[in-house]
Each structure stands twice: as C-alpha cells, then as structure tokens.
Image (tube, rainbow, N blue to C red; front, side, top):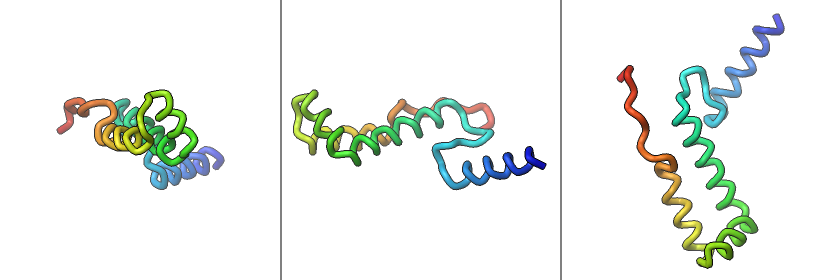
Length: 84
C-alpha cells in the first residue's frame, strides 16, 4: 500500500510542477527546465542580478534582457526524436 501511495504522490508532483519531469522526459527537456529555473531565479533576486551586472560590467537592465533572451532556447534546439 505504501508503494501505491508514494507513486500517487510522485504523479501528483509531476503533474503540478513542470520541472520535476515525468517518465517520458528526455535529458534535453530536463536540462532546459533547470536552466530556465536558474535564469528566473537570477532575475527574480535583485541582489544576484546586481552581482552579475557588476561582474559583467553591464547595467542590470542589459543583463536581465540577456537572460530573458537565453530563456527561449537555453541549451540550443531540441534533438530530433525518433517517435515523431
């Protein structure tokens, strides 16, 4: 009974949160989710954004814009899948 309960909890988390993945998630999708979550965190925390802007010697708006552009395809185009 515990095994069924754990599996149902995992399925619930996977349906609720995109970043947790599921059984059919490929490595590329998982890495893209991780990169997007990281960029969103950097943009959301102004102290991290300030640190990165100072390190790159750019204004915060430009660093934020670069990160937003990287969120479109952070790891390049997706690989060709055989099942399509």
